Image (cartoon, rainbow, N blue to C red; front, top):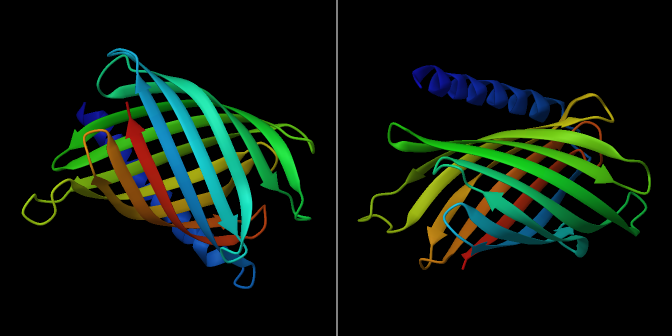
Length: 223
């Protein structure tokens, strides 16, 4: 177990180094400010299975227009309290480089492993995606590390802070061409509802814009 934990720590260091490198090479005049909004609905079937329904609405061009809409459905398998496996499908309507909307169908397979590291929560997620697009199909791999810390109740009850590092490997470029570094807070509003508010920086040396600053929210509902 100690070997596994140390491996995750080394992964965090490696991902952080990748983020710094990507930020240095970002093009200063090729950036955007965006707003991403997610609603993730989970319906509990039993102790081992949940139904999963994600919805997304994103704004780009300095938060002046709708850029992307998503709707999906999937199943969460939970063989243990620490492991979750989620296959799901997404229907995506997003703008292309010419500003016109196009349709994409995407299949995902997500694996999440969570454990406690001293006084912090640490989780690793591996996500594989296959994208069916009018301009050509492709796949990508998205590993990520999230470190979170629950604040003392006398400071803020039900409040956590978190930081996530997520690089992207693209089959089209055959390299890690995108990186996302985000941090924010999670607030438990009720037993069945929580809210994430976060800032995310996306560096991309393959797609445009190359640098994206995101202010995002994610509502998490569990029924």
